[in-house]
Amino acid sequence: MLDISLYSVTGKPPISIDVSESFYHWLIQSDFAEIGVARPHAIQFDDETVELDVVDLEKGNVSNRQRFREFLLEVIAQEACTMLQHLGESPSQEKYQHCTYKLRRLQQLRLGIEDKSYQFLQRA
Picture 1: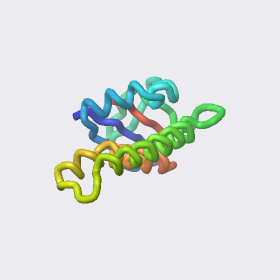
Picture 2 (picture 1 turned 180 degrees about the horizontal axis):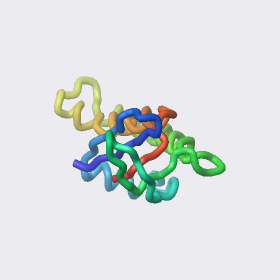
Picture 3 (picture 1 turned 60 degrees about the vertical axis):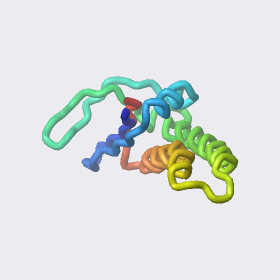
Picture 4 (picture 1 turned 90 degrees about the vertical axis):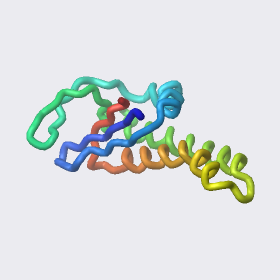
């Protein structure tokens, strides 16, 4: 598993979204990877400061936060349509879990990015 993390400057604990390797590779080959530039930034963890390569969500004429949000909303709509086509009328629990995985991860990511108390995103 790989993860995408969101960090706060207000002391809020980081959000870490675990994603499968195939989901991560799909995501980095999409427009998601083109949004913002990761730069080193000092992030405070408990009593320790660590320098990480992160994307500042507030940077840009149109903020990176807004660009990520718009990308995720579009992809979520596309994924919902694809999921409904694959699920059929009465899917098994296993098929349901498999078909909704990408949609659930995209939604988690969207909710984290929309939370303005998180200012930085680390792609992995």
